[in-house]
Image (cartoon, helix red, strand yellow):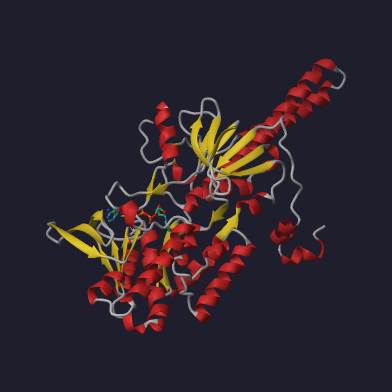
Length: 492
Ligand code: NAD
């Protein structure tokens, strides 16, 4: 039935020929999904949407492939290549699936209502309304942790959303062009060309690597007169960077950074940020603390996650969440503790795993399986009820109907037996600059640690295969080729 276009790829065929739009069916339950990130979109992808009236609410009307976000800060990849509109994702689903671009501002889990706010620029005024649900999935992610350190929010760039990457890209070129301006004092040039990254987790490390590449491969050639002054410093409070990787890969990353001339300052805790400086406390080899000041042109803050206000507010109203600090405590089926019919996935949920894309997508897949099964269970229970009552009405074919009931009951037992969520760690990957990457991969119950150029090719192919759609994949390949052949685009 796919005809001549099937060979292009079923995804493309489906894209062009979406199933018809359907209105909500009052006999079905309303499944409300908050968020459009890894957790929510993985759920949507695998969910049999015909079983529910699905409503998706998120202020961001696209899915973002976050592993390649650091590459967007330097133009190695253009931002639209890693964005997939939620509308294209949803139009491939069957049944009633609605999307509203809005932010959830509070959740009333007792009355089963979510308050949402739409701040539309064209309307000029914000509109608030309540959306009812029968089942709710919270997949709203987390926000950037600042630990209340003064000046961070006002002066630094984060690296979580597309807007952050665009801001950084502009700021890098602003620093470079200002440093190259006529008759700049040398100390001002040094400040402008000092790029400081706070946080030695994978986000900070990958960004520092991309930044150094950008400088070595492009800016140095285009503006040679400032090339000796460009510096990248990575500040980390702990004794080493990338704590989730093995010791060998940590050492490999640190020595690669040394070759790339990225300065790593470990055991250095940032305490204050001003518009031009970062103030930190550095522990010396004797444990003595010393105050250090780093003047900067660009400051990128990548110190991990904090709980969003929506989630914090909900937690404060559920007695069973009193002890939880880092997000919504969930049980082994991802049900939010102390509630009914509310599930949480991804960075806003605390299920005992690191807040990564891998965990969020496995949680989303799990919920899709769970919900598909719940719908099948209800349908089977309904059939059994109907058959049982027909037994009383028409006693003629009792044996046959009983057999049928037994068969349905067997099926029911099988699908009801859903194992709790179990995370299977596939490994960790990080790009560290100059076409090198590090990988800690789970391999036949063991661990495989590798670093270097071959790992970089593995990193690229792994991320390419994980891209959301064929369209994204083609765009990313195109960007890689383009920046290799013609250099990155340095226009602001
Ligand atoms: P992170 O939590 O992994 O690392 C933040 C780092 O900042 C920590 O090492 C912490 O010690 C340091 N820090 C905190 N406050 C500081 C201060 N005041 N001064 C100096 N250093 C300070 O954060 P992330 O890199 O944003 O990652 C968030 C999550 O996403 C993690 O779970 C991570 O594994 C995951 N992630 C994974 C990848 C990948 O696998 N390639 C990429 C990005 C993010």
